[in-house]
Length: 344
Image 1 (cartoon, one colour):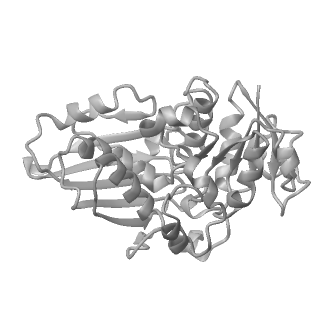
Image 2 (cartoon, helix red, strand yellow; image 1 turned 90 degrees about the horizontal axis):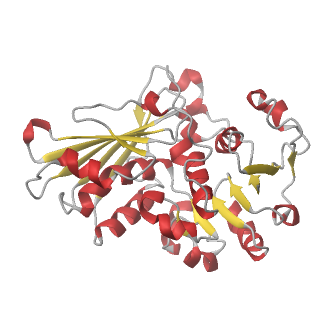
Image 3 (cartoon, rainbow, N blue to C red; image 1 turned 180 degrees about the vertical axis):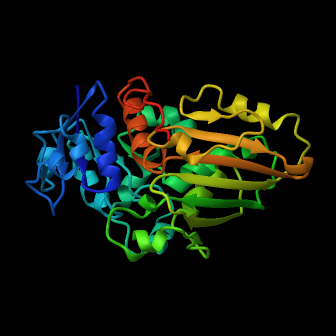
């Protein structure tokens, strides 16, 4: 049995880890931390977990306790994993970080976007970017994995087949993305209140979002050259889900775009290329670790449109983190992640 701990267990990604790991046959959650809720039973805060974690209580972060784990998930704001990851790695504990602390390899760029000094630059060289569809072999041997952000997951999975086939202009990429309110976290914010978000729709961070450099980094690496991306996120009045509408300009006449995507993702357990003409819905991935894709070529013109949907808390965070855990410990990649999506 793999013993795991969770740092930052009271937020949406933390409780989603607990929900998914409750059905994992080879994992036991032995510790979960929260400075503000230390001593509170997990099942008291989250009644949906009654019967699964009745004896587990939140505790103060303790490097010695966490260092006894086989792996520790960080479901925390940026900066927290910087402070603890090195100590845990030295104790032989593997680290799976759901924050942005180790996603960007350019330290000055990270510091510019996150407004603070990078707290663990010495660990960046060994951090593996945890997008299994791209870095599966490296993840298997990793001690430290940086789980991709939600927007970057949906956008990269949609653009990768086209860029690697050199079918679209890398200088004219557009990602028009929508997310539910859980993307903003569980902390109280006026913009996430029901009266503010319900029956409304708005763009935000149009001049620059923190996920932009992460997306650019991944796409440039896949293309092996420079890319230019316009990325505009939007807030929608739903709880979960991301819908990314991606636009590219064809540079060559494609033989069969549908076949290109189906072949590229033929062996990927968590990417579903839908039949030609499909329009995937966010509710079709609710609570599930799948990214559903559809590719279109409107009017048989030069623009290719890719529709990409994920659950921001699952494939966009906690589910992908568990997918990485499975790879790191030589398990079936599907373990704990086989349940179908919730509909309606």
